Image (cartoon, rainbow, N blue to C red):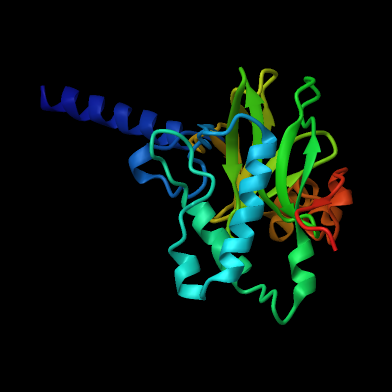
Amino acid sequence: MKQTITITCAILALALLLAGCEKVATENSENSKRSMFDIPIIKYMDYQSYDGVISEFRKYVNLVDEVDFDTAREADVFLEPKHGYKSYEWGCMRDPIAMSDFEEHPENRYKYGYAIKDINGNGTEELILLYKDGSIMAIITNFDENVILIDAFWSRYRCYIDREGYIITQGGHQAIKWQLSEYDSELIFIDGYDASYEPPRHILSKDGKEYKTFNHENEYKEFRDFRDSFIPDEIENATDCSVYGLDFTPLFQE
């Protein structure tokens, strides 16, 4: 009897070992090191049109400019979605605005603006709040006659829009490529990578639990090539939003 139990345990151990060697792996969420694989939640907003958002954005930049730095940090989030939700990314927007120092550098006022573009080609134009250099602050759309915040971004959680209409989010050692759904109601996972692991992972699912590991040969050349093609240099190091195919409209006229 003991011999039978021993043999059974050995077989189970071997099966578990082989399962762990699969190239495509899954990971228990409790042990996950995810930091940006939480799916962006699309948030309904209390605005009837993009004009209302742009107007409030203009007021917000003026508010942060006119008050002292500490007060600016406590200012209400101007784009507060319904149901009382406040996104911390908007709070991070206050600091760079407050540090722009419009009084000493009035030219900084004109770097804030927006662009209008149909990102996914479905006939509905999105509103993109951004800096003149192409740094994206937020992407907003209109779905079923509702103004919706797709996601907001800051220096540690960046966003790029490539010319194929994919939305690429990047934070730390991770990057994810999304596609706005046909009816602008959700973000669809396309591809991604996570270099916070050793070896780096090619992400295959929107929650980051399914992945492949990159080959370690030639100092992870396979990963480096993938990473460089994922966010091309001309997009990642853009100094003008025209790189995204966007036409910049400043919030304030000179």
